[in-house]
Length: 148
Image (cartoon, rainbow, N blue to C red):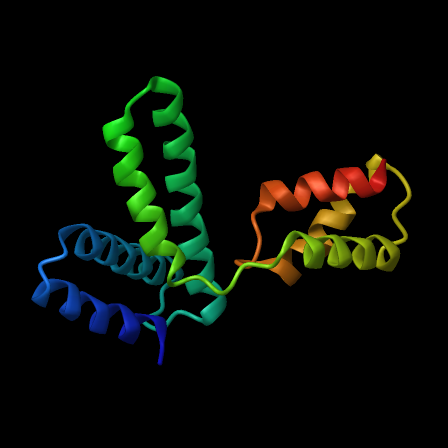
């Protein structure tokens, strides 16, 4: 089942169950997917493009969560946390930190990286491998640890 079909089914269920938050997030994701399709000039997005959109939406929510937490807006923090939980349902299972460390070590060896100057090469090689399955900030931190 494609992501769009899954979103449509979940949207119908959310409407029937009167789940306003879930419905709102699903509509937002559908709109983001449609906008990406328009931007790319296609009606069918590849799985990779769908994953890119979901990841972008999740990152925006996490950034908002950080900002609202710093501002002490607990009402908005709770709303954003709910949105994050709903979005995470549509993402692939996240890699554990141990798995990520292993992937980082393999990638460092593949590109023959030896210092922090090679950080860009390592990140360019590793991000396609973990796209949607790991947070970029965590990957960056693990690569820095490995190269130091």
